[in-house]
Each structure stands twice: as structure tokens, then as C-alpha cells.
Image 1 (spheres, rainbow, N blue to C red):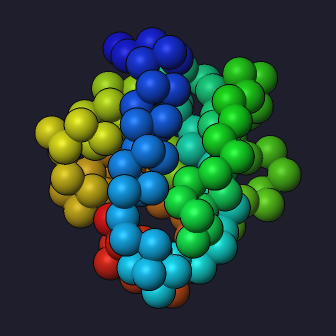
Image 2 (image 1 turned 180 degrees about the vertical axis):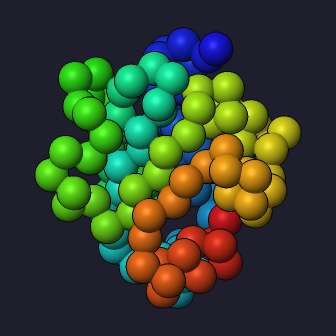
Length: 118
């Protein structure tokens, strides 16, 4: 099982990689959305905002139980090892979703846009 620190590092690495995407492409593909990421085996959650500037305002809330307010427009649930594997490219997002390793709660429109971007 990956640690909270390893998951945080993976998410910050993902945020940095999103900054490397051409700003014009990000602006075209990304609609601003609030995001929550629940790492179920660590019982912890991160929140962020996905926008044309990338993944910003990344915050870890060790006490959060999922997305208790239900306000995040895109909610993901994943195991710690799968999160690290996904960010490192050892696990593909379509396969992870298809096998249930990643659960995504979002509008169909958001799912299409996210799959095009990722």
C-alpha cells in the first residue's frame, strides 16, 4: 500500500505534467470543474480545481470522508497503489475504470472531456 506522502507526490507530479500541456490545448479541452479524489485504503481525500491553468488548489484533507458535501463536480475513488501506478503510466485510465480500480462520478459530458484530455 502506497503512503499518503507517495500519493501526494503522485498528485503533485500529475499537476506538474498538466502544466506542460500546451495552454491552448488546455483551454480548448478543459472546463473548470471541482475535483475530489478519495483514496479508499488510506481513508483520505484530496480536493482540487481543474481549469485551463491545470490542476490547481490541490489540498489534502486527512479527515474528510469522501466528498461529504457532495459538491465536487468530478469525484474519483481509487486505491493508493493504483493511484501511483496510474500517474506513473503503469496503469491506463480506461482499463482502470473498466476493471473497477477507479470509480468516477461525473456528468457524461465531463467524462467525455476528461477522457479526451487524459
